[in-house]
Image (cartoon, rainbow, N blue to C red; front, side):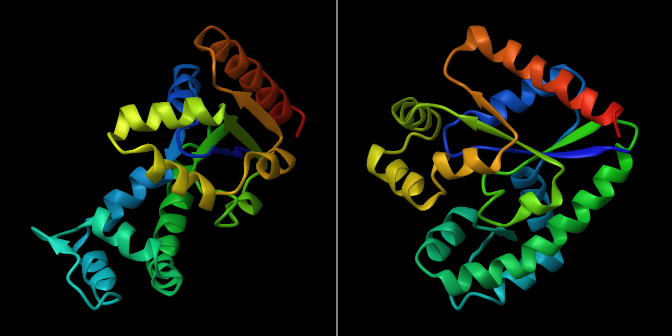
Length: 198
């Protein structure tokens, strides 16, 4: 049986970077946000999402994700409606993807908002990636060319690391490149052992 392992972490924690290291060790990884982007480009999804909004959110036949993000950030009702369209599609896509990787001892499901969306209940284990807040802010400022205030707003609406730590099985601190591969390898070994004991 393939174990489903959630991989999560707040903005700037470096979960994508850590995910790539897991891939180097042969672990398949499902990146929820990337898959959702692909699904959102489908014509029927574009139409269903546009129907939620009173203003136009389509540019050149595709959804304007930054405009949508800006709108739903301020309107919880619209966010809920958007999630009702997108989440079932991503869920089905994930089930199909897992079936394609059923020979693997475990797979990773990467999601920034794993806990916020209640997706942890679908996982056998959870890996949390953390990093000091100032380092996270520096990373995002460099990566996305946005100001510090904007990043702090996002951090403030995300679940706090202390709360995530209590709900996680493994915590990897991503602040030192020299140690990160060793930490990932020890988690890979531990999860392979868990699978073998089933």
